[in-house]
Image (cartoon, rainbow, N blue to C red; front, side, top):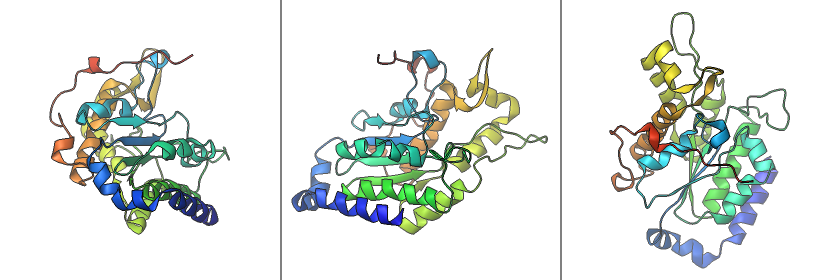
Length: 264
């Protein structure tokens, strides 16, 4: 993976004209900066056949100013590895521009040891793949931002919210320090939120229906709550400024969430 990283990084740098690289900041100030999301089903756009399941990326625009658009490329079932191997990162990097933000959240599917198409090891291949996102964004004058994976709903017998992502959050935190990349610690923040809400109240935030009890994916209240955490962290870490965010302390109506029909 280290060789692949160098090859990808060098190729990407070579593809950016020197004039563009030198004026990226000025050009970015004159255009709408887009926030791109690379991630899995917890963030992804959901469609009518999946309602009320809701990805937090669907709710994030409610907390950002209208001239800070969100381009949500998160896809169900993807890991940091499979997202790259399927060419999805390449597609994003073809459109991302100087001044844009690439927000990366993976781990849920990286943890699937029995699936070689998705599995990554926290301290080696997981970090190696995440570096491809970091290098790709930086080579294009965009800002990479890492977000630890939002936590699942899991409690022990004493009612304590239990972490489920093993070493992946720690590995991402270490990589963020090493690469000097902004980190949004959504794993820790969501775990604390689930703890405050408790065993029963958290059911109102996940995709619990009469036929399914899903402790991983969100319904509208859950997606809105997690998107609020993301927006608050983007502000706290100064990835975005006060002029870029809105409604951080306001109630967001569930009716604002809509599920379009999937394209044929």
